[in-house]
Structures are given as C-alpha cells and as structure tokens.
Length: 119
Image (cartoon, rainbow, N blue to C red):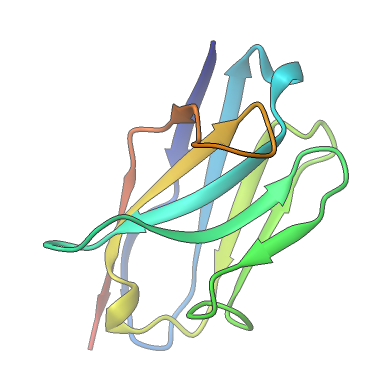
C-alpha cells in the first residue's frame, strides 16, 4: 500500500502562484509515476501533470503547460506542483495520485487539497 498526503492549497488572486506538495509513504519502491489531477465543482476529474518516478520525465495537460511545473525530490517520494499565473478556471480540488505500472488507472489517491483563485 501507498499513502499520499497533499498540502499547500489555499486562496490566491488571479495571476498569483501556489505550490502544492504530495508526500508518499508505504511501499513507495513500487511506484511507477505520480500525478496531479483536479476536479472543479460539477465537472469531471481531469489530469493536470505527471512525473515518472525514476526518469523524471514529465507530462502536462495543455491547459497548464507553461504555467505549472511538476517536480520530485531527490528521494523521489515527494512531488511538488508549482502553479503560476493562476486564473479562476484553475479553481478545483487538487488530488495527488500514484500508480505502479505505466498503463491503467492510478492505484492510490490523496485526500485532495482545495485551490481557489479569485478574480
């Protein structure tokens, strides 16, 4: 089992920045990649960014490219999401996720952290 705990959400004005963190614990050696998803009220959960645990290769949703940066620490068990140039459309609950293979659904999820961007 893998446990994920997010932190760093909050309130920010349009154009501002926030940094989210996700700490993994448990059987982290099995993790293939970790990702951030978000879900706005009344909308489906959507992919934001992912990073492969060992190679560090990243992937982003088009809506956040150039504004968000995903990174991992040297121990490869904590990931961050630096969010710049935030706008109201970025308002959502942000979830950290991890999976143990390169295909299929994400196996583990955090509890989520709220990000609210005001105009």
